[in-house]
Length: 182
Image 1 (cartoon, helix red, strand yellow):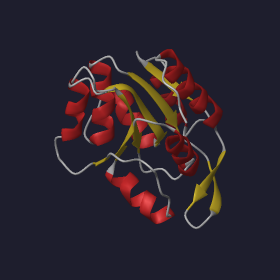
Image 2 (tube, one colour; image 1 turned 90 degrees about the horizontal axis):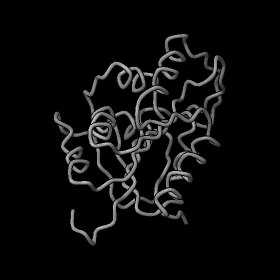
Image 3 (cartoon, helix red, strand yellow; image 1 turned 30 degrees about the horizontal axis):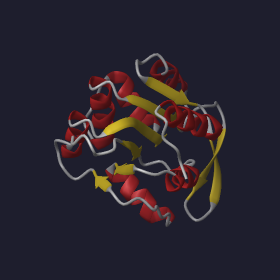
Image 4 (cartoon, one colour; image 1 turned 120 degrees about the vertical axis):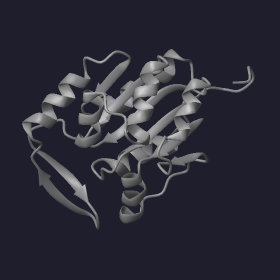
């Protein structure tokens, strides 16, 4: 990375509609953020009709998750994965990195880049937004809640349990780096 080039925030979206709009609201208020979309996230954004104001967007289109090389080049100071599906969290806990988002998490850890994860399944009972403005009750499985707790023990990882915690963790991280949001 060139010395004059500013390190950025990497934000990864998975295939969850749960709190997706709120995450996009946070993203749209940040500066110097790149967006990484899993295959499912690209579909969900279209299905929900949500928009973002991010200039650099990377999609999961390669088998080897080529964009992870940006972490080796020191382009990012933080990785945020929000919202993270129970599938993504389970893979991260098991050390599986078989798609763009799980590869980003693995490489962030290997390059000592701090990660903030907002797991969708944080409580035994939740209301979740579905397409076309429907709200549905969801009941995360015990394994989903256990995986979230396990993820909290991972180095360089902050797990947010709700939107307030996600906002606070992001702002705290940016303040620690003396970076402001709009």
